[in-house]
Image 1 (cartoon, rainbow, N blue to C red):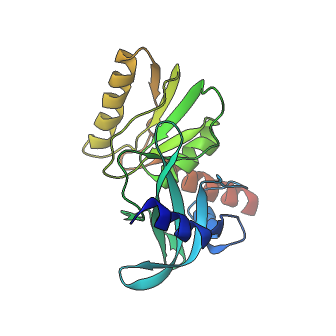
Image 2: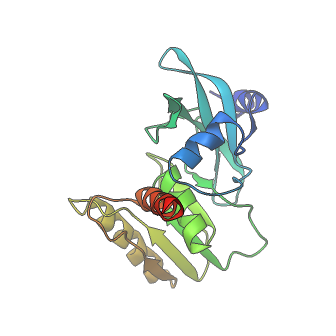
Length: 204
């Protein structure tokens, strides 16, 4: 699919808000944020695996911040399924930018799933970008980089995070790796745990 066709699909989307199904699904996943990045959109009838689904659309940007494509995340059963997205355009290299690019980026975070990126951005207060599945990992040049891999049982996610940290350090950056405490958990899981804990406190 060409970038022109992607733009046509983009016209079918609406802003992602806490009032539409896309925003409610993310909130149900534990992401207790009141507003969503402009690059995340809601599509009411995305065709996925031959069926029509509501979906979250994520714009893909290159290292200069230019839009090079769009990925779609189908909402299964009213919930957010952070699964392999259906690519809406062919592109070479890109990330999901969960923030509006400032003139100078002094610090940035990096995650490996959309839910983890939104959770980390909310909890740590740093602008986060997310790796597009199958694409080369890169970060814009800036002094401070925060990495948010999950705590996988086989250590593969941690290894990926520390490898990127090493690459950034070699280039003169100052990377910091943040890993959830519990084995098998991600930052999206941490956000869900925090939400449930807050609900228990309010109920008590």
